[in-house]
Image 1 (tube, rainbow, N blue to C red):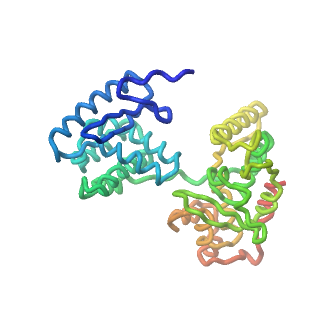
Image 2 (cartoon, rainbow, N blue to C red; image 1 turned 30 degrees about the vertical axis):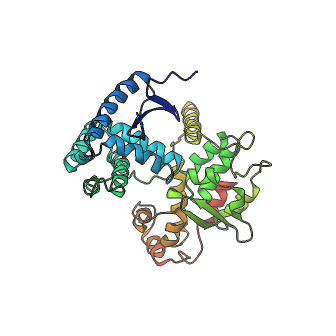
Image 3 (spheres, rainbow, N blue to C red; image 1 turned 135 degrees about the vertical axis):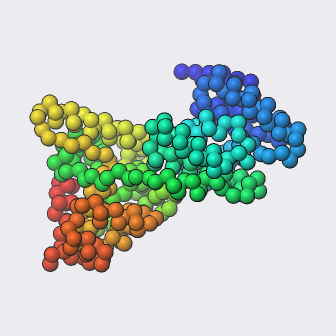
Length: 364
């Protein structure tokens, strides 16, 4: 479908309409957070009047729109495209609360209003925190430009407690049913998640040249572009990675078609699980659906049950805080003795090594 014509003063950028205005020799650009030309026209006119008015008042307070314009170019150089997209989505959710505001009006009272409003809309605490993180990033940029002195969002955000979903492990029989219906390298991705505990995005970005075959290690690019190396010898991870087919001239470990990366893997995996659930229901088979992320939990619990250290697991999973990793000790899947061994960093539980057979069986 042809791209619709942008209204005067607007242009298309990455599928979204942006505004553009030149004032006193300065080119100002900002996202209008919409794909609808009619909505963009209205938002552009409102913003244009405000920006021109601010310019006539010399050193008057900066508008949030002006901060967003500068922040947009700044943030794109510092985080991934996926994070930029997530921030843009959050800011669009906050638009009814922040549209038309000056930077000086982004204060504790407004943040409290945002929290109340988003809660009334049914947003979870985790979603509200993500929205506030995006707005906080804009405020931090404004502070760097000496447009503001402090960030009023941080203190309020700490009061929004984020409740994590309980850790639920998929059963081996449920995993086997999904593997039986998974095509191509989707099977390999499932098994790799179980063997390494890597996040979905980390596996999808993994490259063949990031495998150290001599040491049997794998380098992963995690959140905030932080790299870490993990051992592949455990749980058959190296044998699995070594057995993966490669596509000539393409670097990815996991690919489809002609060496291409998976662009919509999350929805594809969800569809496979949904089809499996439908088949199981039709055949009177007990099946409990699970998320791809639950395979990471599966790996973590089996790691600890094999008598390995919680601190090693923290590095393996790429957690910035040990408190996050310790959630597995409280999830109810470990005995008291296993929890104590994990904290002590022991390698043996009950006089023998454990955990390998079940992980190896998952690869069969």
